[in-house]
Image 1 (cartoon, rainbow, N blue to C red):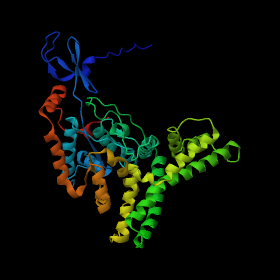
Image 2: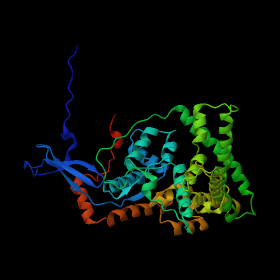
Image 3: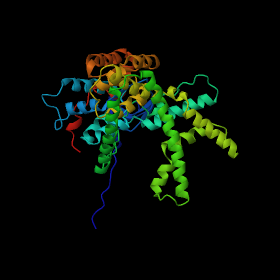
Image 4: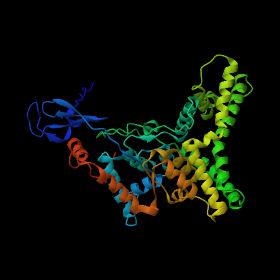
Length: 439
């Protein structure tokens, strides 16, 4: 038998600069930063291992969402193998440097999302994932269906309690996973997972079917001249609740047929029926009504939920309202504003992303096409009045750089001094060598 190898753990690997004189053993340049978590950090001596904890001030980071194309272009600006050529626009490298610095200064965070994952899956997935996970520092927006469900439940709860004009009271902490407002830990763990070829094909197939259906819709809009923006808005705003109700009753019918053996279904298919978005939303809303075992009152509760989902109140749910406005603005561009060119293939994904994430961002950097739709007169005014989100695209590169500069300029001297105290002088240096390290 071979000799057993002993694993020796050295706690010094977790002690880093800046180093101070140890208050216990008095060794100079020995008392370094150990752990950073939430609003606290610890120092530990690498000689005697004496440890002390300290409080940190609460943060109020700006939330900035970067569209997938921004992630991709910054990745190529840094990556020798996949980009970084003479033809690469220097703007994207400068943008990365500025954003990375502000993140390290604990002034902003750029949460990732399921949109990043889906859009990067077919193309250079690992390289792009590394970029958006680096900038998000473990914070991620919930998927759009979940955010929408949270908003609907929040609105219904207020309405049941008697609020005359319910408003969405969800804050960022309820739609972003991870403690985005915490002081950043030096070490970040990331779990690699493979995107299977069949998953990529499924994403491509689904996108292709959506685009084929949309092409027909776009052609119809080009010939439309009787309907106006408000007509499309009402139709789109009501469509979501109607679809949920249809799906709910359709699922109930299928569940019944499965239970009596009339409809064959695998365990996975049955679970998907029971746990569908429609069932989840309706059961969530019923939970806000008085609990009862009386069959008649149960029917009455269900009717209240169905009536709500089919009512015009759905137009006040932020994500549903924004989605309806975006599609209506696009329809209006085709019908009355002379648009002839069809949107890019990812338009449905982009509209879903903007409608669910915009209310929770201080700024968004999106593509030029979505920026143009958001500038539609009626939509722009409503968004401006309801939200304070700054919208940028490649059409206003200068403005986004000025906006980022203003964030650092507004930071207090006390805050910047605390960052140096915890992380050291060279901490804010952008990590442009990100792709130079081998696994």
